[in-house]
Length: 406
Image 1 (tube, rainbow, N blue to C red):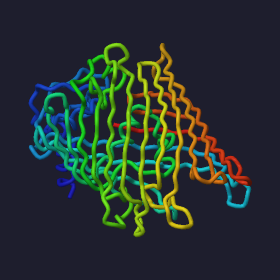
Image 2 (cartoon, rainbow, N blue to C red):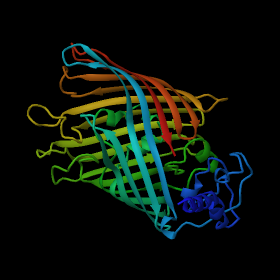
Image 3 (cartoon, rainbow, N blue to C red):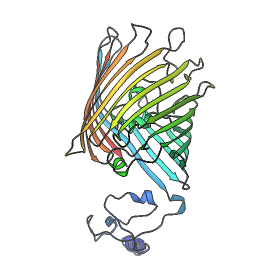
Image 4 (cartoon, rainbow, N blue to C red):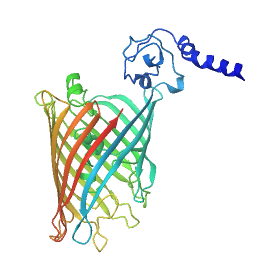
């Protein structure tokens, strides 16, 4: 028995050097380098060398991954927050709740199968109303991509549980989704993904590299971008309750890319039926003017429409309600410390434009953010919601959020 234990000890202590001996000496490792996932190459960390510290000189060892793992990317997008909430208790008063919360828990898995076709699977870990932790699909699609034809550049198509045309676009301008959903989603008009097909791309060639590096590298067509989709209509966390398809389209124009490269004009149109057996009308027309620069981002949008995705924006007769609203957002980044920024937002939403007694909701948001690593934030914000209905008090939320992304 002693001899066996001694043999196992010798094997374990010699394992690191045995592994390193099998790796060709022609790669480099940098502390914190995650490119192994992106390039299909193992990086030989100094941590593996028991005689080297974390800041030791990089090794030059490299080994190839199996072909099945080439082009594989694994990441996460997670929101962990502490919230203090005062909300309407349904009886004219306020109830207070303070809690830690996980607002989003993406496990993002992507695979480039060929140069023109790939796959994405994104489960989302969330807590339901009973407190139980559940996993549901946020995205599950095959993605085709190509250089485009003529004026249409960097085009793509998603088939499956795919993006809808609007929210991913807006969330790459207003980067504070961790604070809460965007204006149209916050008022329950629709969410960000559905089962169907999305086709999109840029208008013209890409913006210059300096703009893409320092302002925004998403939807960065010189003359704008577009997205058109056909979907079941239920969204990514509901069954389709009728046989009606929903058609959606976004067109974004960048009118003066040389003079004001960050100025864009966007229009979203959507027509379909709400996701109930009664199939109430659901129509959306939304326009947005946006400006982006290295230090200032601002948007203003106006919405008018009928009904909503869930089919719940209906009157006593079952007919869809006419609604409208507008929203303004601004972010200012500190010139000498770009990792710090302040932001604010104002929303106004009328739940029934034909009824003067209907609730008109006004939302005020202010906050500050520290991006301590690219894509990773600490955000502190204050959110106040006002109601026009008599007897419904203002609601408040103060929240501190850590966004984790890689």
